[in-house]
Length: 241
Length: 110
Image (cartoon, rainbow over all chains, first blue to last red; front, top):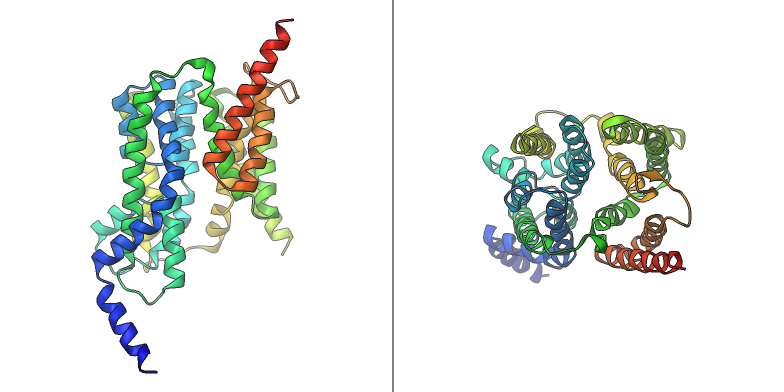
């Protein structure tokens, strides 16, 4: 019985901002292994679609969004109009609003400039690792330091991986079909997203609409299909309640 | 359009999504309607990107066993489902595509 207070006092002493930062950093470290090839693909794809190394690295630095960057480059490659590229990137990254809403309650009492920095480096991985920790250890302080450690490691990995891909990309022959790694990456992200019936229907509806809309100019089928998928997903969910 | 303006526009919209509710939390309530819509963004958008990229061969829709990209994508989807690994999905998908392309090249040689 005496042990409890001792333990928690010790825990509070240990949970300094720096300690929390490193705990988050370490929690994300195994995920890095899977992110490196993805980041390299972002670099390789930039070269494949004709961007300069400076442009490729800058895209990773300022947009910093894997799936959206790859989609943007796919659209650059197929000659889509800028407005379609921009809208596509925005639509793909709308999911960050959900993460933002979910994390926001844990970052309430911090300075706005801090909030902006934390938001800028928000990723699927940093979100997933952090929200799991916040739910498990709700009483621990300095949550944003934990998240910051996880998110910063992913940011560094993404920049270095992109740079490695940019260096390799110029030497990859076209017959290797490495551009196929882009849709493969999306398949790897899509399959876990099909976690229930409404989500599967959303994907199916989007697939049907995008095929029907293949004749439309400027890849307009993509935003149309995305909206149709979201609509069908919500409709299916409402129907099953 | 200047590529830097393009990147800037992409970055601003992306940052707006990331910052939105981290900034607003405590000031506004997240609407339920928005939450339920956002949940379907990943499956809908990813599907709309994947399908045209794998179901077309030389710009033509080809939903057939003769489309090596479609076949490799199907195998990759199974790998993604079983392993939940981006790395394995890419590795197996690429190897299957290379194998099928080599087989098609051999066949067309005769």
